[in-house]
Image (cartoon, rainbow, N blue to C red; front, side, top):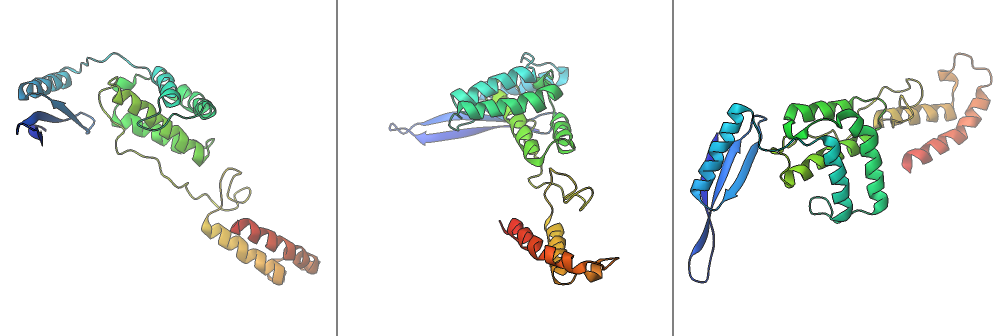
Length: 240
């Protein structure tokens, strides 16, 4: 589906209006492209070229490797700022570069992002989400930079379509099994609200009378005395 519509600008002092034409076309990836032209003829020519490219599979854009786009992105965020934001400090830019070099370049550094489709973006998102060696904060940073690299390339006309639109990474970490090897399942995960509730309830029982929780009740008073301290420490950790 495509459309070309006329748009009138504000009135000039002489009473005339500036006229422009908006081309709205779909892509193979299911996204949409909107461009503005000075005349209807230009818009119609662009629409014809767009559908000719779709039929032939050709593109007028040169290949753009992810690693090259990433290098440009890191320079942009430090020198002029990303997508309308202020430039970041050299220290922050260095930190961003480490994230990109460690977690993104090894995965997709040689990928031509000019040919990327929405399924490619989803595949990258899923790979980050399922990587057991990445903490949730690192996953979010990686996907933020992955999208940011594509966005800067798109903004500067180096890739054709914003195929990442509408694709996001979950903002809350998945709840992991309680007490798998240690509290929270691994050193990198935080216990859920349910797990914290169980911990507090159990520690309160150990502080008051641990015997119902013990197979052998010998020395239960020493356990009780110890948990009188541990319960306070646990409460402090939870509340702060």
